[in-house]
Image (tube, rainbow, N blue to C red; front, side, top):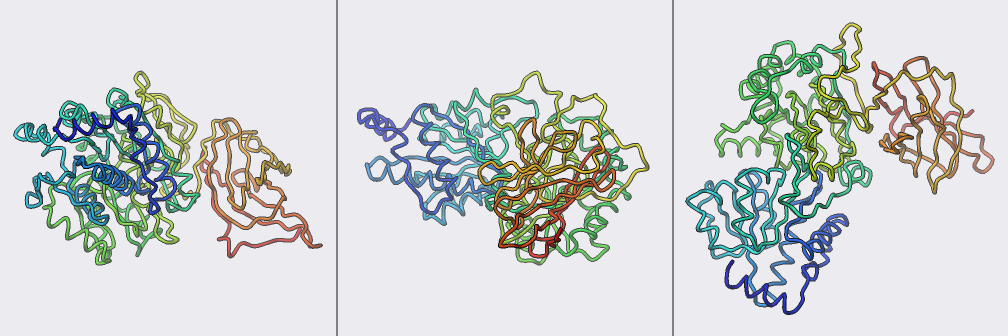
Length: 560
């Protein structure tokens, strides 16, 4: 540790200063970011290392930029210069962090092979690539720098050997890891590195509060040829994910690529988006497919030269390209809020990859609603983007449960157990879920002819009676309609609409595979009872998908 650092901590101990005293109110932060900063500093009063989970697109870089400024200002006011290190593993992340620091006038150096011209070790704030900092030739340099605070971006990588060296290089430092997905393929926990864990609000709550964009989710039916091909994948690579060579053999076919384009043309043609592919060869084949139809598209992968990659991204952001197809490049650190769709063309067993990829489209941009085209059925393994994930459980680790895979919220299966499959003729049409979770039913529901409303008030919320074998009910909370599992109380947001105080909700069957959701409004100033159709639940095999009736401005009121 540096002499200045030792002096500072000696003064702190004598003055009985707490890390929470460093934290300042930052009016430029959103409320949840300020709350996160408060919690991190409070934890540092008790422990040295904290892991913070924060969904993609909710501003983690802005959060730790504010935290860094608090530390720097506190040190300057007491004539104890604080040395702060930010660690990332890719050039895009380093550039993004550097740009955020510059916007807030935080002078810094960069320790990365690609930006040697910006190396200035005299500055107390450094942004470094993990590869450069832990290179054997730089180990003595790293120790001499003696950082007091270390911030690890995309900290789900922290279990790697290179990252674990940080704890031995800077044993006296306060460490913060930030990630959207504290999860590892081997189900190993993070408790041996981080002494405290702080989860943020869920993606669902961020969408409901307007901090993330709502989405329309499309995917293939369970009976489709593509889903059966994905289910048949067996070979795994060293990282535990599907082997690239088998993915190419099974998925990189003319018929499957044609379906990729057909879903693009039908659902998002003319919109701006990114496609996640299997490999460079697969990317090139997709590009040829789309270019033959006049789509302005280019591909990027790890072999694309840095300058060319930067130019393609700039063309995309300026609207000169419609689509970029990439291989694991935009899973982390890519920030383009006006992305209108994300298309998944690569199956994966990694929850991190899945959530990082779909999260690229959920950044807020006006009234944008992102379309997610899941052409490989990944929601059946992991659930939808706004599913409630037990991040505390993943932080602690789940050794012994490596065979459990999530299909959708509240439902698991073990590898090797049979999956319920619709054995009718395969249907390759995409199924749409809008602003809602797909509900997986264990049994076929009873055929109720009509379910009568049963108004139940809970604060300002209005609930329906139970339906679908008594497993679900509907709730209207100030015009935000949700469907709730009566056993787990898990809530899935459906849509927003007009509402009135009181009233009731009901679900009425329209044949075997369809239900209509209605809102019965009370009498107001002598007017007759009115019924508003909110939307429909449609059955696809053993799955139910929600489709809204009309947008709130167009919704039809029917007198009854």
